[in-house]
Image 1 (cartoon, rainbow, N blue to C red):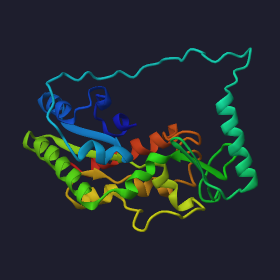
Image 2: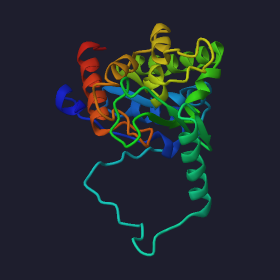
Image 3: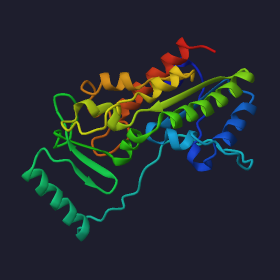
Image 4: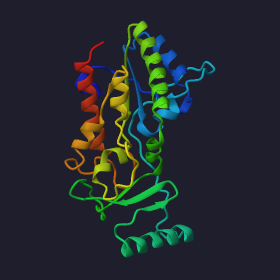
Length: 254
């Protein structure tokens, strides 16, 4: 979508394979055909990823190619699989939801919470329930000083790109909880925890695209903007994100 609407070719790298922001940025700065450098991060890891930017050993990042692929079937149809612990845990959760429909259930990394289905549009069998990562709540404890430190580090990366005549953009993909939070029936979150991280970075001078407002506006317009049983965007969610990115590229030249 970004390529079609902006007319720019895109080469993508998975930062997690190398894990070093400075190393990847150095490669991008030295790439003769790179005119725009975009770093995309999910909201919940922004602070741990950018609060500290250590030096790292030189390494040439390798882009990944997008192509057609298939996933082999790995689940046996017979005999059926039966995981005793998982079945027991799911049964307990089902009983708790039946006994107390307003309950919020926490299990390992997942949170299962009641949600107003008139506010959030999901297609699964229980649109009155909402699944998200418990890690999405970590940002409620973020300190302003730590966020300012991360913003200062990102500004260093931005200035390094500007000094080489390249455009720099940081894209923070909102956590699933951030987008649908207003739809949750439980409001048990600390005061001031509804911070818009992208807006804070933009106020600090970071060239960033604020996706939160656009996603929140479509939470009840696009069915499964985020996947019901996952924390990733759906195909329609990714298309919306691509459209907003292309618009930002055309409206915010260097």
